[in-house]
Length: 509
Image 1 (cartoon, rainbow, N blue to C red):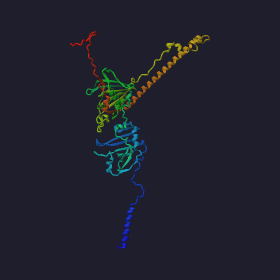
Image 2 (tube, rainbow, N blue to C red):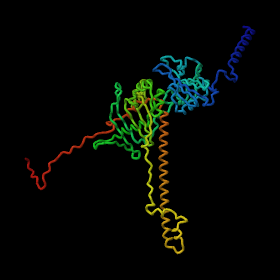
Image 3 (cartoon, rainbow, N blue to C red):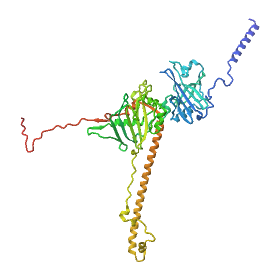
Image 4 (cartoon, rainbow, N blue to C red):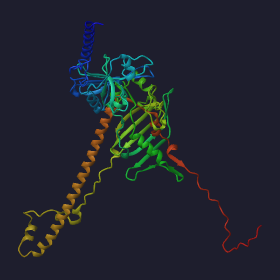
């Protein structure tokens, strides 16, 4: 090979080496326009008060369809359109949910492939098909003008990472890792309301009365049943019942379970009453019902008989020390509504919590439940000392002038002690009258507060049939046989006693 050919080869190899080296050089520092890690998801959403509606959508595998919970703010009040605009009492829940969507930062990019959406659990629940897996939860916040403030699909939690979830924006493919608090997102209706239905202090219960009547639905007649009245002493924490026999004992365990069940009574679902029925209740039971209202009542186990609202499961009265009387009328089983899971479910993940039951609640004021003021009688001191001795002598009283004349020392000395006694009696009288006035004013205030409390409760109860768990119903709706235990009477055998003065000779006849 000639030297010329060798030179050409060396030049070619060197050129290739330079080209490879140039291609393999380190890239100059510059930002990838496709990498948006660290940017905000919703940069324009900076004030949670801008949110006027919140919608949370999950995929219900049992029904193979999306399950949504939507809350909207109307005229400053949050309500739940999916439940006939029931008031959303849990206002903090909305504030926390809206705040959780603010300031979200796009974490590391996990995938840009649609085929990975199932893997990371970010399939849109509104587009999922029956049998789909890997479906996420979609959160949407809108303003009063229906402008979208935030919209995100939250998928699976990153393994071993607290509050780290895979997320993506609807309509986009990219999946990110994001730090977000999901504790405030729920499609359960009861998580967005004040679940405590009665809002009572169980230790302030004074009496519980039960009327176990039933209804002859065919003939529209009331069939009387057993009546039970229980009294509770909050100071001694003891129960009592009228007409308890010597061989009968109250079962405190059952009674205390009932007391706790009343205090813990929770709303499972609600249904709006017909307008005529709810407005009638606000007018203190002056009911004028049309056929629609009567049909609404009867379908849930309630009847109007002789202008009286009755239940096919009787009535329970819960009387409080503040004068409030709750009237609980339990109705039929609420079909299609499952109660919350309870301890009775024994941890079975497949349990639906059992049946649920309708509950019609009203409140009444019972002034006789408030102890009367301790008014002390005012003694008639004038009858003790005489009327003249309780009054100061007048300036033109001749006898007073005579008592004041020089030399009338004996009369003046006798008058001074009488004046002191009269003044002491007058002071004692004033103190009794002042204390009586304080007692009366405190009593009047309790009456006013109790009446106001009843008005507030009926404003809350009037529009709604409530649904409660049947397990709570079983604890509250007790009969006498449930709370009274009867023991067998002790039989004393008669023994023949030999007459006095006789001796037992030990012989056997």
